[in-house]
Image (tube, rainbow, N blue to C red; front, side, top):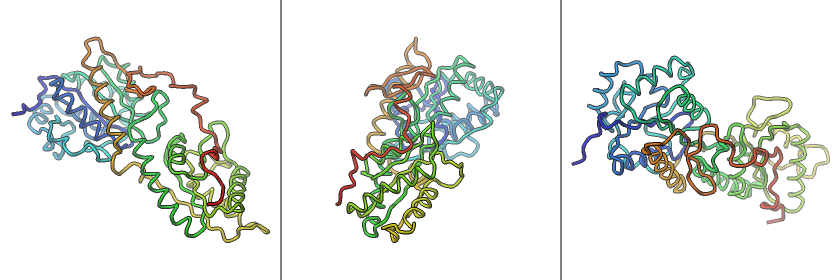
Length: 382
C-alpha cells in the first residue's frame, strides 16, 4: 500500500508559470515520481502558477493544510477553491506526452507587489515547504529570483519556453516539440505551395527572439527565414531585397518558396499588424510591378500562432524534463544545496545561479534581420 503524502514530510512545491510549453507535464510526472520513490518527499502542486500561490496565501493556513491533505491527487485538481494539491503516483499517470500542464498556468500581475510576495513566503514557511520549483520562461524565472532575494526559501528554476530565449541554457523545455510542430506545418504548406506555384509566408512565435523560426527553417528546409535584428528594424527596401531573391529563384526554375518570419521582427515604420501580412503586401507590390516576370505569382501569408504550443510532447522534451527534474531534486536534497536554475550546457545538466551569464557571447546568439540560409536551401530547380 502506498502511503499518502502529508505535510509532515515537508513537501516541495512546484508551479508552472507564464506561457505553457510542451514538456511541463513530463516534468511534473518526473519530479513527482522521482521525489516520492527515491527521496520519499511529497510534491505540492500549485494550480494556475503564481496566481495559485497568491490565492493560497489568502486562506487560513490550518484550513488550507486540512483541505489539501483531505483531497489528494486528482481529487484535489478538480476541487474548486483548492489552489494547492499534494500529488500522488496516480495523479501523474499517463501525462508524460501531453502538452500544456494539468496544474494550469497563468500570468499574475498581483505577484509583482512586494507585500503579496511576502505573504506567499510566510504561507509556504508555515506549511513547512522545504523548496519551491518554478518552471517557466524569462518572466517566471525573474519572479523566482525575487523570492531568493526576499526569503530564505530554497528556490530552483526550470526553463520552459518555446521561445528558447534564455541565454544561459542551450535548450528550454518545449522548444523541440514546437520545432517538430512547425516542421509538420511547413510540410503541409509546402504541398499546396508546390501545387499552385505560391510563396507561403508563415509567421512563428518567439517574442523578441528568432531562435524558434531559425531552428524550424533549418529543420524543415524552408527557403528563407527572417529573424529579429536588435540593432536594425526591417525596412521596405529590405523586403524588396527578399522578394528579388525569390524572383531569382523562380527564374532559375523554382516552383515555390516557404518563408518563415518571427513575430518579433521590428518594422520601419513601426506597425502593429502581423509580420506575415506586412511582408506579403510588400511581396505582392514587388511582383505586380510593371514589367515584372511573375504577375500571377500567388503570395499567401499565415500566422501559425498558438498551434506551436500545443500537441504531443516530443521524446527529446520528455527526456530533458526528466533530466531537469533529477537535477533539481538532487540540488534540493543536498544539505549544502543552494538556489539556481537547471540548464543544459554543452550537453550536460548543470545548476547555474540566477543571473548567470550567457552560455556564449550574446553577439553570436543575436539573430540577423535578413538571415538567408542559402547554404542549406538552394534555389536550384527541383
